Length: 353
Image 1 (cartoon, one colour):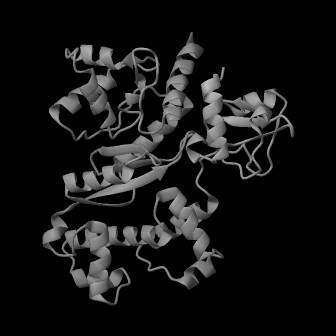
Image 2 (cartoon, one colour):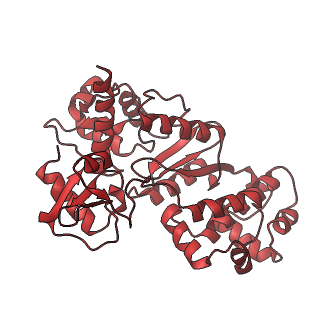
Image 3 (tube, helix red, strand yellow):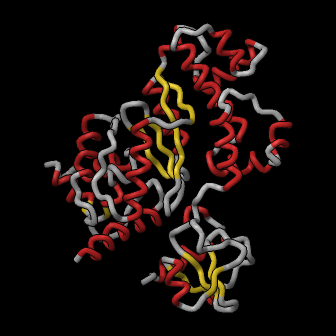
């Protein structure tokens, strides 16, 4: 059942075409008999003509037919075919220096590629391809190759141009000394309620967040400084395992994760995060109950602050903590997603009974 507060919230999301609500609700328009996604580009209906649903199935059962423009029956957060085409092209030739003619060969408009990548990754295609190239250059320098060889392999004739590009991404110029920096990978994948960004090295996951989270850029910058590392696009074994387990979680078939995590925080923060992992799937705790479980009953504000500093969403389930009066409280990925995750877990528990 959708509350009046949710209806108002959903209508504002519809008016502003807020992508954070993709997969959270669908809107049926009584005057047309059509149902749409929140981001549909069609003219917005009056609020009295709107009927909101949590799933596309509910809209269909209410006799609405799917919009031909926004196609609400297709996955709302899947990466576009254009982005997938270009990512595959980069992986086929990761050292390639992309030029206008290369887009023409793929029958792709460069400005369209820029727009799609900016929406998906927060960076343009050229920035993505450059970051991938610099990651390879970094590995070569670390393995003992000459800087000039790494420069030429990346398609840079000018050493100053190579140094500038390398420094922007890695945070330091390409020297043997700086080859001691660590290298971590960033990978985006889709979920039912929006794309997520995972950052990890060969041993563990350091960050997992919804890509639209406020302050995500600051989190990444802080992580890079803490690790004294460069962050470039790519996949590691922990990221591969994480992507599989997150998919199973959203399908409702996985409750406990085995993905190795690296939790960077103060001793108190780490204690709070470990406590979060002890909250059973499908259940919630109040901030006060969480503080009491740590034997710090007066520290509920500090506990709430530590929850907010959690950089590994879902696996460290800060979404399972709510206020004592039942209100959701805060959530970095958005309150609508927090409610969805709580409902998702509770519904899976109920289905078993």
